[in-house]
Length: 79
Image 1 (cartoon, one colour):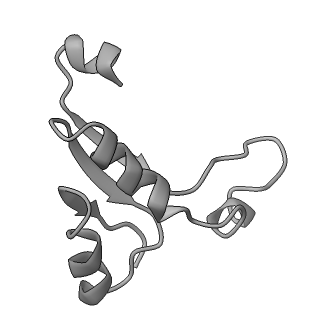
Image 2 (cartoon, one colour; image 1 turned 90 degrees about the vertical axis):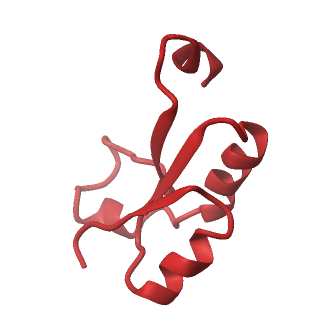
């Protein structure tokens, strides 16, 4: 991430699920593999000067508020 940050990007939107393009259909990949929010939280902890925005499976304002305790922003999609 430092390499990209040194090039001028300081905001990262990170999806909490790994994308397996060959094993699963796009619909299946919405549930498989499981979301790993802790990995995104760890990125923020490891790179505190970068803006980290979490994405993936967030459905309501209470979840948004919880995530904002660990990262700089929250991205909502389908719901």
